Length: 159
Image (cartoon, rainbow, N blue to C red; front, side, top):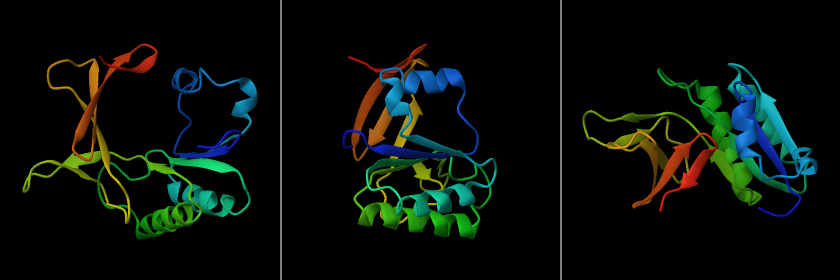
């Protein structure tokens, strides 16, 4: 991400103050003015469409985050899936990183974890709880596993 770039964060509800302070604790206050949060309640599609339009208005956009984009059960509305694919393509064509976060499910037929409502042209990562130690989280990415310790101040790399 380039220096002094803007971040768009689309979410259903604002993260609590403790979570936000953990995420942004190392940033100077002036940097927070470049964070654009769109909390849309259950109307995530509106936030995703707004983010796609926002991309055309900011020349120094460094990241788009769509937090909790898919429902945890049932089907994602087709309009939401279409909006996400438009956002993915817009970010891709403008070389802007996109982080789309959603719950996963375990496939009873084929085994293993699956992304809910797979999106086109996306790399999928999974964050799991460690089977032995509940304070450890495992980030699974393309065949590799990185372990993190979950503490009061958030995640820290586990040696």
